[in-house]
Length: 255
Ligand SMILES: NC(=O)c1ccc[n+]([C@@H]2O[C@H](COP(=O)([O-])OP(=O)(O)OC[C@H]3O[C@@H](n4cnc5c(N)ncnc54)[C@H](O)[C@@H]3O)[C@@H](O)[C@H]2O)c1
Image (tube, rainbow, N blue to C red; front, top):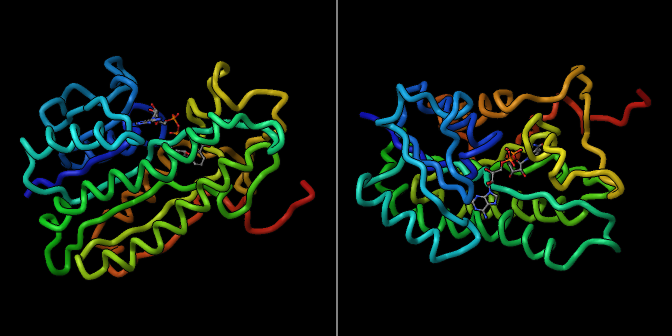
């Protein structure tokens, strides 16, 4: 039976890589994003066009989430997995952050995953069968475990997401839905590399950069771990926050 996944933030970076990996593994994938799907060679391959749908959706807006799920329900009576990757970063020292940026991070990074999960749960329940529970995976951040100067509110939003995921894992256990969080360190995506993006100079924000493993993560390093949380091997794992940071937070280093 073809398995179906919904991926928020599927138009870019980590979410896009997860979509591509799911399609390559034979899943049907729904991408929900405020940005349009990439139609060039960096987007999902046209060979998977029948198994891929992209919907314009603002995850922080309940009506937009409702509209997206109505479209999903027209074609899929159940879903097997939800991956919440949509997220925003606005940097700045705490005394300098703009209230509208704080609202945006709280809305997209915390309320968004809650709105989407709340709407997905009835479909996930239908996708859950004994020994093959449905899955929810949140993309948190290592900054929610070890925060950085220059991104305090982003770190707070991710720490809050980690907490919500743990509570959800317990609340949804009876429904046969496993909830886990992947917490990446710096990953080479537009969020960090786009020169017109928010992680600019003068904010005090420093990406983690090189990890003890000697490189910055690629989106696939994160997608691999997400795939583990969607697979048979993780059937008894729920409520965890798993760092995918090349050891960055494990110990302070003078290097
Ligand atoms: N890149 C990193 O270094 C890094 C590190 C740790 C955690 N993360 C987290 O990983 C996740 C993915 O980030 P990324 O690096 O792939 O960034 P990205 O900017 O490449 O992708 C984020 C996607 O989310 C979408 N998005 C933003 N607001 C949205 C909204 N309101 N509704 C729907 N979609 C929205 C964007 O359009 C974009 O496609 C985020 O939650 C981010 O916080 C990233």
